[in-house]
Image (tube, rainbow, N blue to C red; front, top):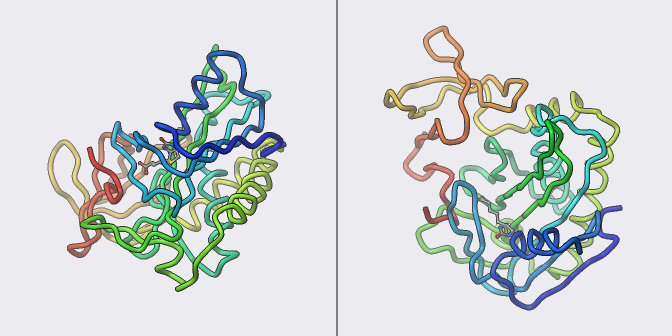
Amino acid sequence: MLGRKIIYKESLDSTNNYAANLLKEGLLVDGTVIVSGEQTAGKGQRNSQWYAEPYKNIIFTCFVQHVNLSVDSQDAITHFVSLAILDFLKEKNIFAQIKWPNDILIGNSKISGVLIENQLKSHRCTSSIIGIGINVNQTTFGDWNASSMQLQTGLNYDIQELVFSLIEKLQHRFQQLQALDFSALKNDYLKNMWLKDQESEFEDQNGKFKGTIQGTDELGRLLIESNGSVQSYDLKEIKFLARNASAGDSSCIQKD
Ligand code: BTN
C-alpha cells in the first residue's frame, strides 16, 4: 500500500537521495513516501538540478517494490506515474499533458517533473524510487518556462492535503501496473502525449529536422516520423525544439 509510511522532513538535500540511503541501509519499507518542505540539492533528469521555492511546492518521493516486472516493461512505471499526476491535476480542473518521457506540461510550460530511479536485478526491475516535484503555490519562476497550480487556478493550496490526494492517485494507477495492465496504461499515456501527431521541430545528432511524434516503441523510446521513415530515440538522443520561442527544451525549472 502506497503511503503506508509517510516521512516528513523540513529540509533534505534530495528526497530521492534520502530514500536511496534508507534503501542501502535496509530501512526502506515498500510504499514509503518521503515529503520535504525544501530541498537543498534537488535532482532533475539528465543530471540537472531541480529548484523549488521552500514550502510552496510538492517535493515528494515514494518507494515501491515490484513483484515480477521485467526490465523491458520499465516504461510502464513512467506511464503509471505520469498518468497519476495528470489524474491528480485533473481533479483540480487543471488539464495537463505529458511531454515524453515524463515532464508534465500545461501548454508549453512545465508544472511537474519526475525522476524515477529503478533498482534492477537479473533482468528484473525489483523496485523504484519515484521522485515527483509539482509546482503548487509558487508563482514566479524567473526565466524558466514553468507554471504552477496557483498560476492556473488562482487558488492557494494546502500542500499536505494535496500530498494525500497524490498518494491516492498513484495508488490507483499503481494497481493497474500490478495487474500487468500495461496496454491500458500505455494507451492512456499516448492519448495524453504532448505534440503527438503534430508536426514539430526536433534536433538529433544530425541536426535539426521536422517530424511527427508517433508514440513510443516497446522499450519506451520516442518514435518520430520524418520524411516517410520512423526513428526511435533515447532521452539523450533527441531534443525538442521550439514551435514558438517559449516552448524550449525540457529544461524549465532545470539547470544542466
Ligand atoms: C525533472 O523534471 O528533471 C525531474 C525533476 C524531479 C524533481 C523531484 S522533487 C522530489 C524528488 N527529489 C529530487 O531530488 N528530485 C525529485
